[in-house]
Amino acid sequence: MSAQVKLAPVWPHVAQDSDSEVLLAALQDGINLAVWQRQLAAPVHSFVAKALASDAPLTVATSITLSSEDAEPDLHQLFAGLKHIPGHADFVADVQQLVAMYACLVDAECVGLRLRVLDRAMCPRWHVDKVGIRLVTTYHGPGTEWLQ
Image (cartoon, rainbow, N blue to C red):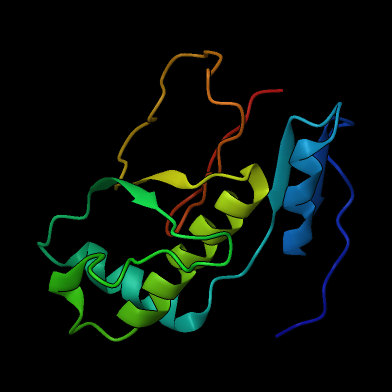
């Protein structure tokens, strides 16, 4: 893996870094966006590309209850129909890591997980969420836009 690179913030209310610890900044006053600029592992990237090329349904919406603060979320059945595609276990491990990090960040025992393929904006209108902290990631494509 390459060395961590410190990135200059885009705006004063944004924390941005290639280190996952930047997500902690989302809890600070005056910060409303924390960006972890990460590189996906090659097996995850490959799995996602092959999964997108398949005819398999790629939508998940579920709640995950963690049994303890240190518990790994049980996602072994995530896209179980795609276990034959190389990189499946790596993809599941990546999602597990994000769920665990989010649960730790917000001190949650239950986390909502939503995975879907988007071909247009998920939220086409500007709005304010009632969710205090949301973790968003992109596995393929141009990524997420954020309005200042």
